[in-house]
Length: 401
Image (cartoon, rainbow, N blue to C red; front, side, top):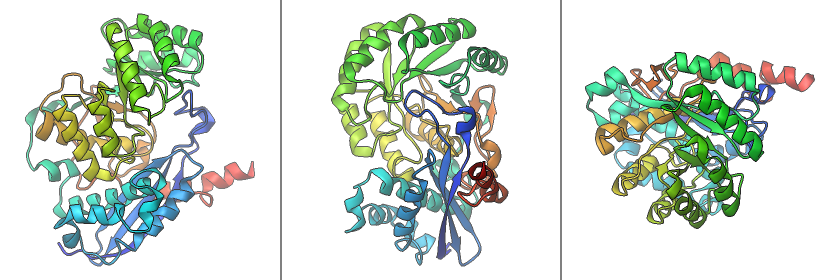
């Protein structure tokens, strides 16, 4: 398993999802789902694929950060890395000069995630296993047969019309979905109307969550969500600034009598912030992200902390490739950490999976365990070429309009 890494390439891949407002919410009104896409080449021909998720503009900055990290990776063998993976993680996150740009947050940490995701993918491919199997090296029959519970965010983006919401909810119910998330935060009366409409569509027995994407301050969040209590949401996601731990604690305390929990974590910088959120009882649902934290290494630490505090993990997904990656982490969490599915589910967004060689598989509203070796990061070369910014055919057409 020497597999010496001889080259690292990174490409700016963007999908014009803003044209139809896919992914829109109260804070991010025109996202172009994008990725800094990393490929590691080895001397034996085996490749590793990794990515981190962005919303379009600024992806080029992440590329610069990845290139700055490349010299810490190229020239090392896979054996050298995995025999002291903790040391390699710290090499990337604690470089004497690059660390100043974080530490362990922001653009430099997104770049770290992309590089480490590619390393984990390379290792899993070298072992001939999907990443979750590499991590657990065991099998739970329940997961193979039934999969891991998922919830859908695809029905209720903020930019969708009522007619579109109704049709998407109806289609989702027919496909077996029972857990739905709704974007809120732009207009209170419209939120009440839309949430009541969706609750009416999905019925009282289905689970409903709401997501404000950091739109409010603390007092506004408490007031706004209290008005939405009639639709019985399980949680309010990202009600305020993702850095405001004490603010989340105040919101959690105020909403507890209403039976509404607080979920956050998709923009939590690192494991230290997660530790403080948990210590402060500031969240009732932990939402890890496969491309925001420092790849598998840091996500495993957060899973263990969440288990210690007995807080369920319900990962953030969607985006470009996030569903493909995070499915491996939730399988590890269930098999080796939590052994519990109560109040646990993983987000699913039905966008852009067709651009991956091993797309996530959903069956009866459950993630089915991936079988292909690797971390499910590899994109189709034709898709990368077509969507690479700014020279891909898609962007040439958009720029010339």
